[in-house]
Image (cartoon, rainbow, N blue to C red):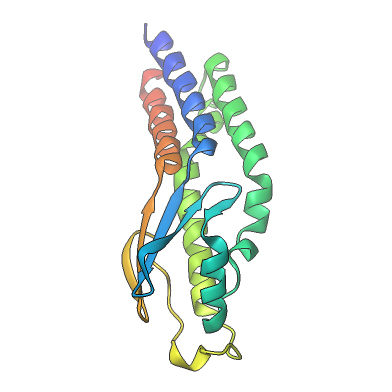
Length: 183
């Protein structure tokens, strides 16, 4: 019975992580007096959507690089990475033993790796402003919020993880739940 539960959990983890690619992993809303409804950006594993052009235009004045410049390597390998994780989880359904933990490891670390990588890029973009930009003297380097609210000059930012990240966390939890069952 434990083996059937473990297999169901692993298949559920594979479905959850595969489904995660269709939803944003993170989103940001930036509000200012001239944008009372806010500007919105959604970050998926392999692309960014929303009012990217408008935000890039505003960021240009303070010397911040365009959003498309971030995480090029990560976006390129996100699809193959998810396929790898799904294949590992499905393989873990059939390969049992003390080394099967290595097959669930990629799924368990994905949510934390995504958050850490996103924080790296937010920090890099915010702390490395172009000193020759038009308004570079009016703003000090900053780190945009990874989670919660932040203020950058007259702009208020609200950041949160999205459903994609939640599904990757579900996959991680389901994968981790298998370990005690297979002992």
